Length: 413
Image 1: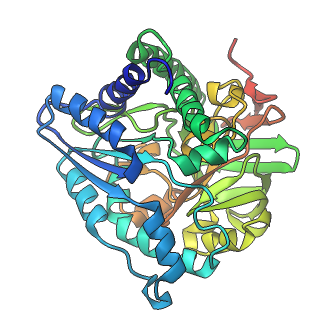
Image 2: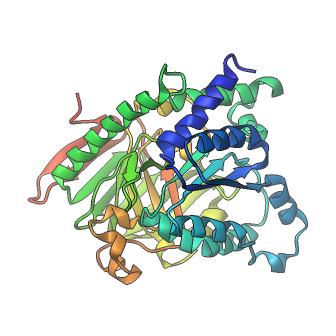
């Protein structure tokens, strides 16, 4: 076990409760977590109650049970998912309570399984979760995604380490990238969030109309939605609760215009999706939609993903992350989108966030789409940035300005 593990685990739980969720007195908390994560769940629950939570509940999920279903379950059943998580999450969101999701899935869980079954299962899950996803898109409640290093995930990140070492090494990486190694992690996060807000404010002041990405295999233009708004690590509910949805986070992000995307983009890291890895892939867009794609591994899964619905072949998010982010500098490939997306600039297929559009939270789906927002059952981030990425930005009067050079901000000293 790592030195000071228990103290660091307690600090991690405190970070989740105080910075991630900013849990308020009398709020309820729902935790969705992998079975092995009980140590973290217990620490979070204790911290939540100490901060005035009224009730803490947990729904555990079991990777092995999902794998068993794909091995032995009847094929005709894969259009069904249990409604319990969706109902519980939606109820908490509607009442302004808090939701914590703990990630730790085996990236190779469904490797080799029928892509069609994966498509049907994920489609059914996304349909069931859509009402809750709409609440997330409106920032109706405080929510956060954090992680727990399960054995299977740790083995993927550190394949040459011994069984005794690899989970400790992944814990060490999580603690470091989440600033738990700082003397006061909560204070360190407040400083970090302020830095992100400085970048956010710069971009909002500029009000660029489009971004142009260039890197090996990438030449992509993305128009930004009119009245778009850049967001960063911390956001706020309608009742004024300031929360940080991702731990860790290094991004500033906004809403692309779904019809103004043209060119080719090459992923700089693998995408772990639905228990499979999609590797070495590229997408070509025309007038906002994917018209061609290639992948060295997982192409069938990627094609099924793009075909989920009409919006799945367009984009719902553009996010900027400097290559010097702590996660990038760790040199690790985490095979986990929560970490890998914060190592590199990324974009997301599928649903856009209404809160990235001024007045967007009050819009219907049709009104959101009319203003350039993308509607879809999915929202899948994938990484495109590197130290070879250059990004130019187009101003409202047609001037082109450097935004990122060699993966770093062109305007920041």
